[in-house]
Amino acid sequence: AVPLVIAVSTALAAKSGLLIRNRTAFEKARGLQAIIFDKTGTLTLGKFGVTEVLPLEGSYREEDLLTYTASLESRSEHPIAAGITGSARDKGIGLKTVSGFKSIPGKGVEGIIDGKIYRVVSPGYLEEKGLAIDNDRVEKVKQQGKTVVFLLEGDTLAGAIALADIIRPESKDAIARLKEMGIKCMMLTGDNRYVARWVAEDLGLDDYFAEVLPDQKVEKVKEVQRKYVTGMVGDGVNDAPALTRANVGIAIGAGTDVAIESADVILVKNDPRDVVKIVSLSKKTYRKMV
Ligand code: ADP
Ligand code: MG
Image 1 (cartoon, helix red, strand yellow):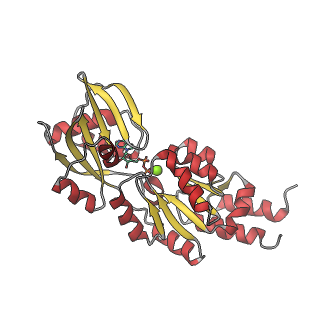
Image 2: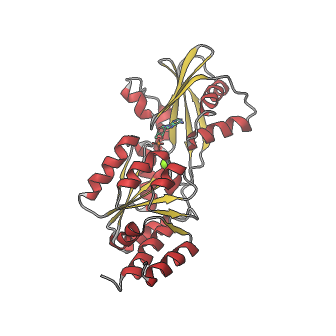
Image 3: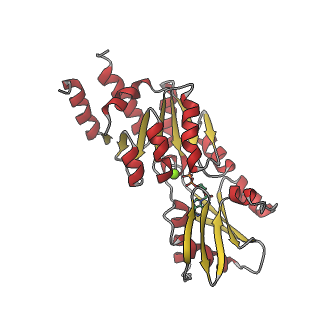
């Protein structure tokens, strides 16, 4: 039988927007020493807007760049894809037919348009392929803390698209309160290091890891676990193994089904301050027990 105090707490948690899927993990929450947050969609809203469209090589004008990128992205479910297709829609841009669509996990997407192969990719992908360029306008938007993706036609760097996301208004308070409880707050992201630094500084995070590929996320959790009892908060498909691995895996309710399935606790209201509630409720529930 479930002790009364725990049954009451589970009900109380549900009432305040916390869905506890794993009670053993919920008990461990009182001993958390570090919490790793995913960036996009967790600490930020994950709602990107296009801020700049920058033609680079070839004869691609701004409108062409949006046409090709949005056509590819219309097949992706990434928050970046939603930002780009939304912007193209607002500008009344028509989409082209894409065949052979594939996503490159943690790096971008690819597909064939009019018989040519196109890719929309991260700065990390360009570096890996030796295609990175030195461009003042691209550097400037990166330094501003924006997310930047590139359109490639074969090996030609057609252009760059800069996007900005919004930090959840509740994130700052959540981090401040967790730090007061003596918990180290960290961030994990596949996005570029400038965006990561900007978010980390704004929120007062203790540490952050940028340009982390999906399969490396779980390795980062293991690394932090060598020193601390570690929680992980995420929302995406890529976060699922890290959520499973963490001592307490927490998913944002609006996240993907995979993340939710892998989590011990679900934040129904998508509010990172509810992470504070998990820790304090776990402390209250198990204080009177051994
Ligand atoms: P996060 O950890 O922030 O959730 P991801 O691991 O999903 O990020 O993606 C990491 C990076 O890979 C993105 O910042 C972007 O540069 C690139 N990327 C991933 N998916 C896409 C996509 N659909 N279109 C363009 N770029 C993408
Ligand atoms: Mg994410």
